[in-house]
Image (cartoon, rainbow, N blue to C red):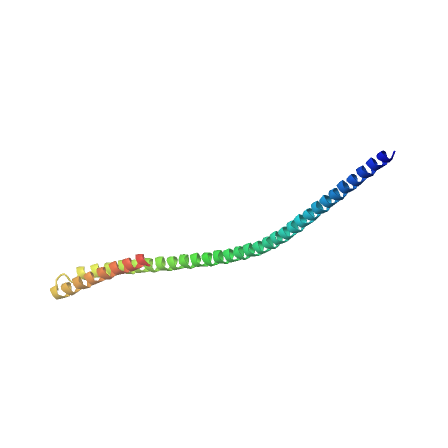
Length: 142
């Protein structure tokens, strides 16, 4: 009977040691899980802050892009207006040159008998054609 009691006592002590070891392992596992949870929480908080910052940066970039688009549209409109004005000026110059050519031709016809006046009119015609060419070139370059 004493042997049986001693065996049970030894078994009880061994079970107590196993229980203590199991409790210690459980506490270590819980501590590890708590650390991992805290680390995940810090990571989530950092990720959320990063997303907020990224969202702000994207909003600012979109705002800047919108402003650049508006400025680009304004530049395009200015260029179109300048092109219309240049075309209108070219058309006016072309009509004026046509009128001048007609006047020059009439003057040349009326002064066939006068050689000095003919030479002067020919020179004027040549000058006007040079001006026409320059005006047309200048209008095309505008």
